[in-house]
Image 1 (tube, rainbow, N blue to C red):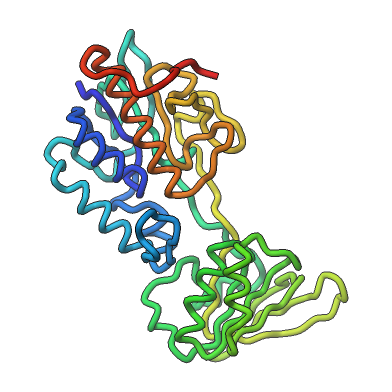
Image 2: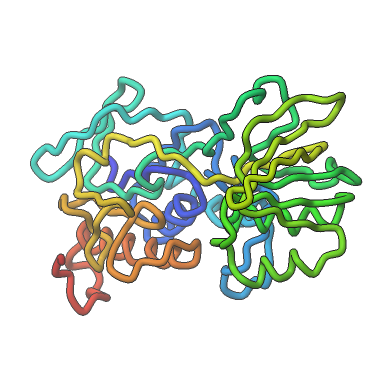
Length: 322
């Protein structure tokens, strides 16, 4: 029987795997895909990250590799298993029974680090989409887009991060957003506006797309003036957010629209099941990597105390649930 099962091997799960190993907790990490890194690997490998203490700027894929290298000394103590499909979770007295790939795994505690489930990019769904092969949902190998005319669809942080990176290699970069207001950080928007090869089109609806030689033509309508126009692009990047696919834990613990409701020690409504990172929600929660790493320290410390109540003194002023 394991002392801890960590669900998810994204950046928060990797740090949890390292920290569980450092605290000498007999653990295993279960990842549903065939690789580690989560969204930072699948969707945002080239995205610059600025909120890691002590690091001015780092690409998402490089941060993932550093987290994995940090974990490696404990790989024999905390194995990461890939392609793990958790089909059910059952509480038995003071431990849990997981049905994973039709095999049984028993554990005393669980730490959820994979949000409320797996995430997939929200797709552009308009006529003509199947014929256009240059529409992308992640940015990698930046030099591949050198001297191209690029369109980025979206108005959030990821859209602006992609757009700003592409200005360094592309001929032109155009952001098309359905609203006049942007959700991205003001500094990112101002940086984009200062470049001499950029354009912003708002508030625009994408009506349909069509293939024209090696480019895609995007047909737009201004939501206010109703004016219609076409814009051509060699490559189109869609940043419309992510869609969660619920996992089995969402039906076991208390959740709300923002995640799994946890107490100050990261424990959910079920004793022994904890959450950290974007999986967790509590009063004042800020969903950043920096806060997620802090959640892990809190959760692993609480789990260690639950497993070994007399081994170390508590670090919490109170473990009372909300």
